[in-house]
Length: 203
Image (cartoon, rainbow, N blue to C red; front, side, top):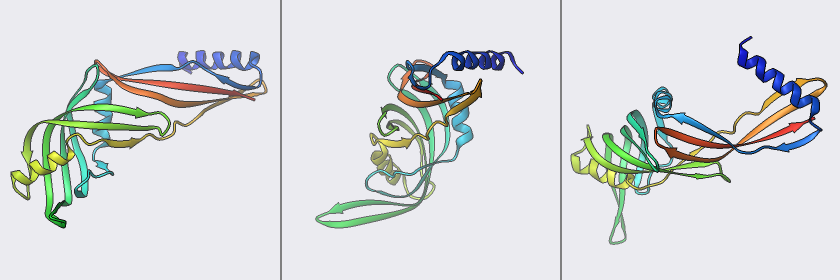
């Protein structure tokens, strides 16, 4: 058994030995995740489907690559490559619905994005602001790609966070369960800062 596991076991044993039964609210915990680790995890998650299409767009959009990920004080920046299938751009002219079928489309661009976290809904909102477009479309012309970029630009995309699984341990006739809720997510220079609220239940 490693040293940190031994220390963790000893700490839980002491806590359970002296803690009364009930719920113990803990102070928030701040966790910093460096950008290199986030980029590595993001690459492994590819392709990542954008489930909520921007207004005026139909089709299936996936993020197929992310690179040059950088975190600053109030935003993140990166280079993204998107692939769209069965794409269509919708518009309205003179009360008539216009549908422009695009088909497949590849977009390669750099973006600066801002994050907003809703702790009640546990949803992280990402709002990209497109800066430079490197490539636009393998089907359809550059104007179509620019139109899609304009629809993506400045839109908020929701990312629903999965519930953090509780941690449970038993010793000396007591059971301890630690439930954790995300309080906030924000960018910091060099990474992402996550604030967590642990609630310990002792029985």
